[in-house]
Amino acid sequence: MSSPEDRCRLVLVVPAGDDAAIRAKAVEDALRGGDVASVILPQYALDDGTYQKHAELLVPIIQDGGAAALLAGDSRVAGRAKADGLHIAGGAEALAEAVEKFTPKLIVGGGNADDRHKALELGESSPDYMFFGKLEGDIKPDAHPKNLALGEWWASMIEIPAVVMGGSDVSSVVAVAETGVEFVALREAVFGHAGGPAQAVAEANALLDEKAPRFDG
Image (cartoon, rainbow, N blue to C red; front, side):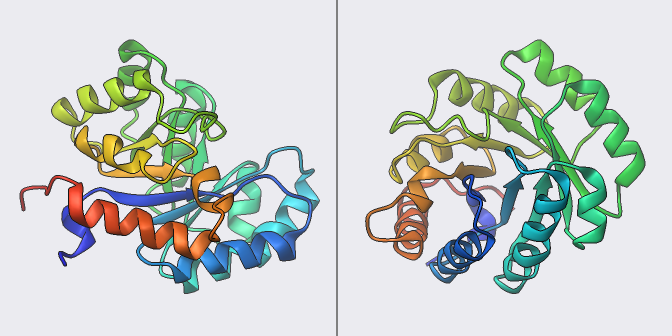
């Protein structure tokens, strides 16, 4: 088996939920399943105080599991919860501001680019990664064809690593990896998996080991 560094790796997106303990257990299970590069914790509809409580519980679990903890929400919470980074879902201005303010202390990435022009605009601030798709965009079993096409175009031209949102089925990681991007994001495919999150992560890694193209040195 190859080291995952030379192929597309997993990024997990924590689904919405009010119960921090249930979310923490699901994330802990997922990280037991195998290699995960980072975990994004979106704020969803939680108020800042509740989001901070969730983050303070989840961030150490994510880090202990060997992944980077990225918060998609109030940037002040990232500091208080000692997260590794920020996922910025706003436009180019919000991303540029966050990059200027928080790098290199924190990982700062973002996305929501639904065309090449927007992607290049977002890329001008040199974020740590570019995310294609929405964090809640896994509504079909397969990754969205537009995100696959954008990821492939980006990976062939731009040095900034790319993350493409996968589908609600674990097998969607294969099509994402074949675009040449560095990361595939999964949410429902892992946390809604019939066999549980650990099994889902193990299956995703097995597919990537077997089918993902290898990067050159």
